[in-house]
Image 1 (cartoon, rainbow, N blue to C red):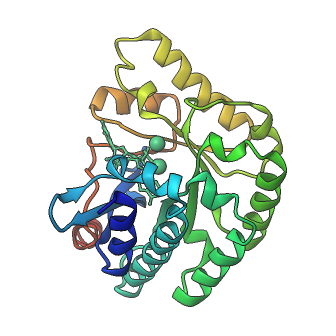
Image 2 (image 1 turned 135 degrees about the vertical axis):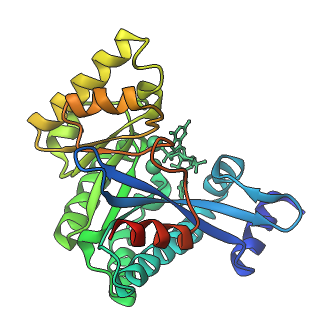
Length: 253
Ligand code: G
Ligand code: G
Ligand code: MN
Ligand code: NA
């Protein structure tokens, strides 16, 4: 069976699941959000990570129905945590360009919010710089999403074919500093310069900043010193099954 057929079958048989990685306030250490990360519980090969199947899903177009499943599942789960009386959080969902640039994308998001009952401010969409290639379509989609009230973050910031033009023109809420800049930051002055400059630029543009891939206390201290609002990485938590997120939140209450 081709991987394309397998992906199709996986959707039908509900073999996908989401793990959630905490996003933490750099100031208080409180959890303020989670990023939903897809896994595939493959019947023969075990738990597969996104880099083992997302690119095929993108090439075949299956990322559209898979992405819709991710969005619906993440919103439903977040609403469920809220109904359990846990502290309200944002859930961040990764989007492929192909999904984000579809004409009916905002409509789909609106329907999912309505069906799950999740308030829009508790959903954040993570798009990458590749989604900005079609400037006209991206501008339209971002305007619609802003009107809907959902938040938008630029993921992997600084690693794509960046243009600073869109930071100025597009309605965005947050930049996510790619973990390649955070890694080895303390040994590499060039990475420190990049990280502190991204934070400063973002703040001048009224954007919030989250750093990903934070693994050490020293990295956290540098980010705190430079007023990065939020952090995500193994220092705080790996991506967790939904039950473990509930535990984590319960402990924080
Ligand atoms: O969980 P992990 O670190 O292995 O994720 C690797 C990459 O896969 C991340 O960069 C993330 O953006 C991407 N990814 C994870 N979940 C999804 C998803 O639901 N949709 C899309 N399009 N990409 C995802
Ligand atoms: O969307 P993105 O591709 O950036 O998704 C985050 C990915 O980074 C996930 O696959 C997650 O497992 C991984 N990740 C999260 N925290 C850390 C970390 O502290 N160090 C490393 N090396 N990877 C991380
Ligand atoms: Mn991401
Ligand atoms: Na990223």
